[in-house]
Amino acid sequence: MVEYLGFARFQNHQPDLKRWIPTVLLSHKTLFTALCFIGFASVVIWQRSIGDGLGLFFGAPLSPCSSRHPVAFNLTDFGGVGDGVTLNTKAFESAIKAIAKNRGGQLNVQAGVWLTAPFNLTSHMTLFLEEGAIIRGIEDEKYWTLMPPLASYGSGREHPGPRYGSLIHGQHLKNVTITGHNGTIDGQGKSWWIKYRQKLLNHTRGPLVQIMWSSNIRISNITLMNPPFWTLHPFDCKNVTITNVTILAPLFDAPNTDGIDPDSCENVVIEDCYISVGDDAIAIKSGWDQYGIRYGRPSSNILIRNLVVQSMVSAGISIGSEMSGGVSNVRVENIHVWNSKRAVRIKTSVGRGGYVRNISYRNLTFDNCRVGIIIKTDYNEHPDDNYDRKAFPILEDFTFDGVHGQNVRVPVRLHGSEDIPVKNISFRDMSIGISYKKKHIFQCSYVEGRVIGTIFPAPCDNLDQYDEQGQLVKAAISPNITDIDYSF
Ligand SMILES: *[C@@H]1O[C@H](CO)[C@@H](O)[C@H](O)[C@H]1NC(C)=O
Ligand SMILES: *[C@@H]1O[C@H](CO)[C@@H](O)[C@H](O)[C@H]1NC(C)=O
Ligand SMILES: *[C@@H]1O[C@H](CO)[C@@H](O)[C@H](O)[C@H]1NC(C)=O
Ligand SMILES: *[C@@H]1O[C@H](CO)[C@@H](O)[C@H](O)[C@H]1NC(C)=O
Ligand SMILES: *[C@@H]1O[C@H](CO)[C@@H](O)[C@H](O)[C@H]1NC(C)=O
Ligand SMILES: *[C@@H]1O[C@H](CO)[C@@H](O)[C@H](O)[C@H]1NC(C)=O
Ligand SMILES: *[C@@H]1O[C@H](CO)[C@@H](O)[C@H](O)[C@H]1NC(C)=O
Ligand SMILES: *[C@@H]1O[C@H](CO)[C@@H](O)[C@H](O)[C@H]1NC(C)=O
Ligand SMILES: *[C@@H]1O[C@H](CO)[C@@H](O)[C@H](O)[C@H]1NC(C)=O
Ligand SMILES: *[C@@H]1O[C@H](CO)[C@@H](O)[C@H](O)[C@H]1NC(C)=O
Ligand SMILES: *[C@@H]1O[C@H](CO)[C@@H](O)[C@H](O)[C@H]1NC(C)=O
Ligand SMILES: *[C@@H]1O[C@H](CO)[C@@H](O)[C@H](O)[C@H]1NC(C)=O
Image (tube, rainbow, N blue to C red; front, side, top):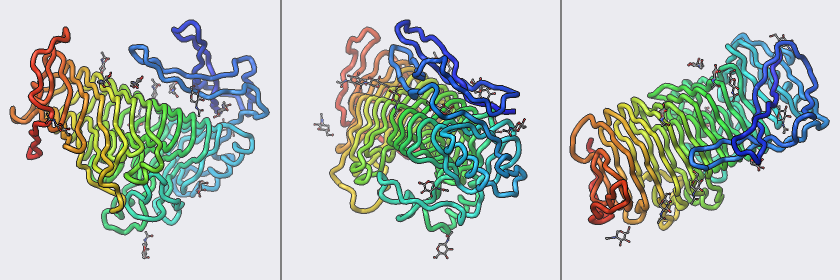
């Protein structure tokens, strides 16, 4: 069975624009079929239309009948053995070399357990994980490639100097798809977590999948599990869609196993995913302190929707704490956070610089969380001591519309500071059932903004209160009143 990527046409509701969406078409007989999409148009654009006219457009220009002949290979064609014991690094490398030589193609990984050391992807390729296929990372760190630290972090996140690369890696790529019938990429992180805690590692651990300086990346219909470090790390990429992916790691004792960390990326859609991990389910980032400020690449235009997430150690949806290149134009909607320590969090500190701006949250459900919405401005982890004490991040333009839930101890904690005040935050249509005390359930400090209509819990006195018609009902006493209580 060979399966390959095809293109199906679809007409958008905007009549003046023809749009195209890539679809996985399945064929049970075709082998080495030369796919020449000459009959189709020369542009592939896939568009995500969001609610009130906001749109993210992206896709890749397709030269429909270039000299490349799309091919599909099985890993077994290159000597791969899916017995869970044989090392398949050479098979992956040869297959991907063949695809590169062909200037594109698909690699099918069939059912079986395919042990491998880290390998690199190439442009215009699809890695297709069939049902029951498991790509498993080798535990012995000697096989893991060392790479220079990311320029925007200055040093490895855990150790100075080089860091381990990722199990599946790519740099300077275009048009890469990782998909399948819910096959799995398993990082066997456990041995890494243990060594990390025992301080036996000399370098920062590697992510499971890391794609750097690339564009038009699609990841869908697969399961990612047990990363040594972060799970999926698009770094300085453009046009990334992540759809219908399951991400699993133990909820405890799996340090830094973030789910998806878009880092200095532009045009990202993350949708229809289930994420349950040992750190943040999602963390939007853009570099660390003076290194991130110098690298200067923001994360922007990011849509996160229709997720179910769980994090007992950190938070469901985070921004930061590394955000020195700036984070803006983020929309987070239809998110269910359950049995978690925190639901949504923005974290930063003095030294970061940058900004977090124009972030809108809609239709969030918090179910049994310790803290609901949290902004923290004293997340004091620094790459070294040379950070700029005057580099104050700007936090402004946040909206929360439709936040519901039950069994939450502290629904809201907005901890701005004199140096890093939170500006222009608004709340509408919020009702969060509390599980503990009735006091200190809407905590504020250095926060300026408003509430529209009646919400529960009742807002702090830092915020103006309007009715649904926009009439001021109660003016804020002062933005700078401080009522923060971490004691419960
Ligand atoms: C790949 O393996 C399938 C069986 O799983 C077979 O039908 C197909 O012909 C193989 N394709 C190639 C390119 O070897
Ligand atoms: C990203 O998508 C947009 C919209 O389709 C397109 O104009 C742009 O060229 C893409 N960016 C890259 C780097 O391919
Ligand atoms: C992957 O590519 C990067 C960048 O070229 C290189 O540093 C690294 O060694 C490659 N990794 C492997 C496993 O070949
Ligand atoms: C993208 O990659 C696929 C293989 O994964 C290939 O069939 C297709 O032609 C590529 N598209 C472009 C625009 O290069
Ligand atoms: C999501 O992925 C699963 C497993 O691969 C698949 O069965 C299901 O059809 C996918 N859902 C959508 C909406 O694509
Ligand atoms: C995909 O596989 C994972 C892990 O085996 C499983 O938890 C998940 O339910 C599967 N998803 C679908 C849609 O079958
Ligand atoms: C870390 O460095 C020490 C001292 O050089 C060495 O003995 C040890 O094997 C190294 N550990 C790893 C995991 O590379
Ligand atoms: C996911 O898998 C389903 C079922 O095979 C398929 O219909 C859908 O197009 C796939 N989606 C993506 C984005 O790959
Ligand atoms: C705010 O972000 C949204 C995307 O979430 C974008 O459409 C809108 O233009 C941004 N607003 C401003 C003022 O930049
Ligand atoms: C709100 O999100 C939930 C998932 O958390 C979804 O089931 C529901 O349809 C969404 N409601 C609206 C109005 O979009
Ligand atoms: C406050 O934020 C909202 C939503 O991001 C934005 O539309 C509005 O222009 C901002 N107001 C000011 C005064 O900046
Ligand atoms: C609140 O604190 C800010 C500094 O964060 C200051 O500029 C402002 O004047 C203070 N406002 C009041 C009313 O005290």
